[in-house]
Amino acid sequence: MKNISNNLIIATGFLIPLGVATQNISLLLLLIATLLTVKKRKAIKMSDPKAFILLIFCPLLLILSSLHDITFLVENPNVFLAVVIPLLLSVRHELARKEINKILLAFVISVSLLSLSKTLVFIYQEGIESILVFPQKKLASLLIRYSYLNLSMYVGSAIIFSLYLMKTGIMKKSILIVNSFLLLVFLVLLSSRLILLATLLTVFLLIMFNTPAKKRFLVTVSFGVFVLTVSTTMYFLDLPIVEKMKEAINYNNEYSNIKEKWGGRIMRQEIWYCAAALITEKPIFGHGYNNVQNKLNGCYENTSENPVLYRGKSKKNAHNQFLQFTLATGVLGLFAFLTVIFYAIKKSVSTKDLILFSFITFAALCFLTESHLERNHTIYLFYFFVSLLLQQVPYEKSNSQ
Image (cartoon, rainbow, N blue to C red; front, side, top):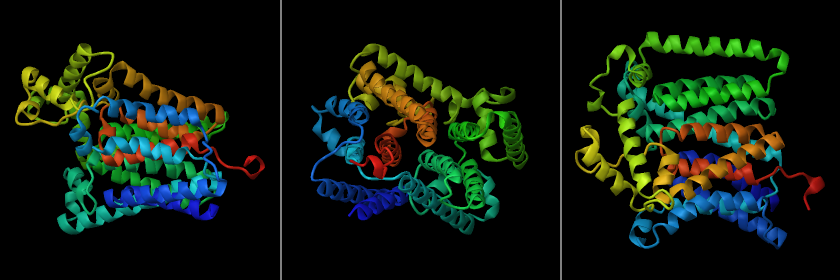
């Protein structure tokens, strides 16, 4: 029964990247695995009750802030996933480190197959030369519909997991290295600046922690040369992400009229201005999960000169997860979410859990410029792996009981 339960969780890791339908199946598999574990133990034994409470506290605040608007909650059920997933993984599944690594590998294989399939279909439909002409949205939407930002976070996570698995012996290092490089190429094509930088920074930290002190200088130089080579290649190929990088830093003052475009630095500045102004109105408890977008839209109409924001019914969220939670639930919600991140970092350091540290660092960096937890795909990604790595302490026979 233990093997069945664990295999179902491994299957969950494979299914999560494959779209909403398979995510729902994965949730069902996780439920079955949890029920089998409870049946075997004849009791509900939680792995880390403190972690569970911290994980669900902020989502519960979001739900409570909108209880008076049941229609909104029915139309936006994603927030309930942020409670259900940690709940199912709060039960003490008997997962050894080897099995946790298999879950990570299943996810890596799934994301790799998805990325390869999307690339091949894109080349077949558009021609290989089109791969260099801003393919991000088309690439992301093929086969299984993603936003390019959601997909980028999945690919970045897969790169980090793949490199971490190199020291586990679960697969040949050469295969994992090649796979990581190909995923990095795909990530560059998706053209998310912050997620690419977050991935590279997290990979650098991961490599440094795995490197003896005497070799760290050499590794730092080697990594710097690698990043410089990749950057130079991107520049001479004139990839879309290069244009976005220039846009972000207003390269040579070429983007003085960037207000007419989406994605620039000025656009986010206007969004964050509105978010900050709204937070000052209700700093303690926020405006409520159901009211945030309407409040932002009103601010855009009154203050923004950017037509992308104020024309029609804009749905541009706060583009920062920390601001998003503060808008909805005030500093109380922000504190709850930050507590999860700091608790995960503290636990990863005390237990020397490098993959937990790497994933939570990567996610926190990604949250700086996007409200990723407003979307179904990234709710599954974040809450599944944080719950898994934070709550499921590797099981050993010597202390199983």
